[in-house]
Image 1 (cartoon, helix red, strand yellow):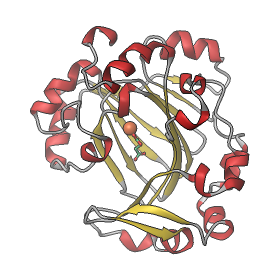
Image 2: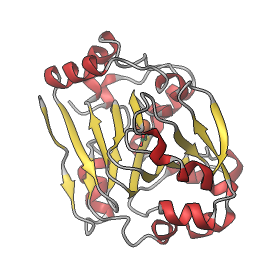
Image 3: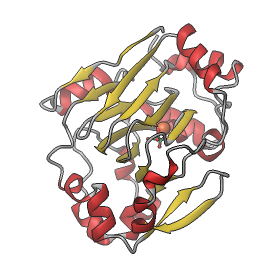
Image 4: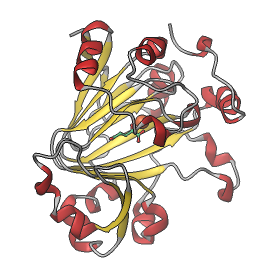
Length: 267
Ligand SMILES: O=C(O)CCC(=O)C(=O)O
Ligand SMILES: [Fe+2]
């Protein structure tokens, strides 16, 4: 394997340190236990989602690639039933802030990640804050996030493994059929299903970072970094794609249909 552990920081890291050391430079980091004391973390366990919000319906991508809106109680109760399944159903990109006002009231964007979309009028802000719920083995294949945005993901329950590749490795990953080209939508990118062998081989050949998140951990995924995720246990994640100050110009280029310049990535 040519993978190393991703850099780590403790939950005491200051917003300034995170900004200067990682976000500004476009470098990933795992911040241990940062989400432990977020009010939203307490109410987004599998048990709490099943019992308190069980009748709410959320979008689940099923094994054939189709989407269904399922009740949280039904989906969460069925998580154990997918052990042997090749492709696991995955409740993905659920815009819970719109569907469950009670949860919206408990959600506060973490002050560590300054989101410049906040400067847009409210109705123009993209709805990029989502919950993910899935069984062990639920996975998102290698992709690059939408509109040249940065992302953070908080693991709220269960463990999840992440693999991140530097943006300068993008062409190699495309060549190996592990990544679609930059113009593909998130939906298109996460539909490709490269062979597990091809991914394993790429991990042997191409330097990358890897980390297992445990509940409370938050990973920062910088703009342009191809990444893949796999749940090691049934679990819940909360994630948001945000516009960093550094990504303004490039995000505008991508929004207009162009390609970001490689020069904006760390070398
Ligand atoms: O947790 C996952 O399955 C992947 C999250 C992610 O990378 C995304 O939503 O873009
Ligand atoms: Fe992503």
